[in-house]
Length: 124
Image 1 (cartoon, rainbow, N blue to C red):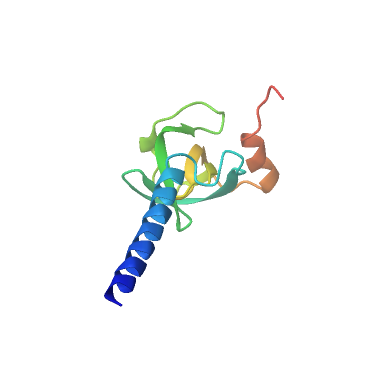
Image 2 (cartoon, helix red, strand yellow):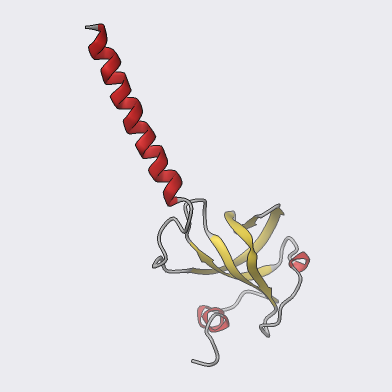
């Protein structure tokens, strides 16, 4: 009887390990796949804690490739992000949370059309 319990425990342990390895393997790249549509939204920048940004109480991840741009699409320093600043964000969903691709510093809230125009390529 004891052998069966041990065998059952080993089976559960192996199943759990396979599950964990699968999750770790998936988190190596984009969690939701390369085909996941980007998120576009605007809001008030609340705070930055290391690589984590909080915009409208939504936590996002800032990476080395995150671009911080002015309204005229020119790069600016990330230090220009100050609490209370309106921003427009393009982010990609990942397992560890939305990863910011681009942040535009805004003088005020934009309507939806104006905001989406920021993220369109002028060459299209």
